[in-house]
Image (cartoon, rainbow, N blue to C red):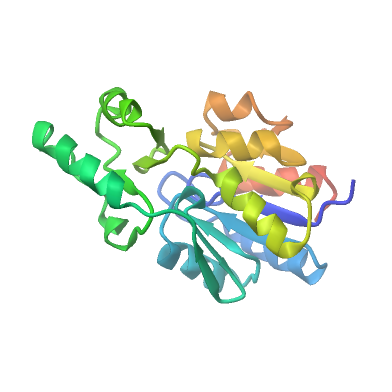
Length: 224
């Protein structure tokens, strides 16, 4: 099958553990878009951060932010969820666990919340899971979203906007919130540093970490 789009997580996939982007990835993505293959950034991060990445990388594909909560395509923003009920649940949680701080970018988060990564995730999952919310860790934060909110949900919406099928998409990822996306696209690639839950769902696991793994995967599929 000819792949028509590349979907990629940002943190821990095209960036390293210190969040520095792998520079050759930038040039690879630009070459892909020159060939008509859209590059879609799919992140748990907020739209302002994800949009900044897209601008400075120099690509034009749609953006999926907040694990499918926010989509941007051709300067139009689609908000898929509301976080008011999650905020109410967080207020309850904070009373019991005053140490439950949120990551600094949460001031721009519109559809979910993200707690600092040092929190005990089992405790977070127990509390919010009982209330019907999805809890996923990324290594950079603990995300609390609506149960149906996930990266593949957002990517399906993007595929509709691009008039393509999700089977025509190659996806790259590394952490828990990438697993559904990796499992359900046409070809899912886990970079070498990915969590086991992602590797188990992938069609291919790279030998190289982070952005070097992305380059490896693109070469394997003869996309660059």
